Length: 117
Image (cartoon, rainbow, N blue to C red; front, side):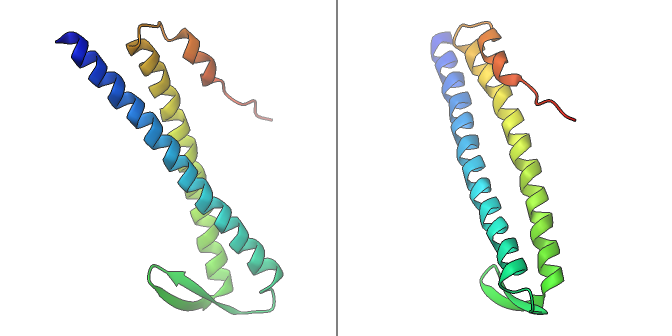
């Protein structure tokens, strides 16, 4: 019975890791499309004062400055979400290795932090 419980825990943690990977990919796609939108606003729509924006299932004409601010805030939110998910994934990888019978030392090498200025 304990063996079955261990398999269930391992499967659950592995599913969480895969789900988080897919979530990072989705957030990264959104981040790239936001980057493209900011570039288009600066280059092609530089003369415009108001631009059309798709909000959910409707289009709204808003001031360009407000749209840029909204996109930049969304970018910041996505960046923090992606970094939080990456940190969570590192913990889950260590947990999965421990459940598989390791001591967690092999997966700890993935917990390196970047050097800052």
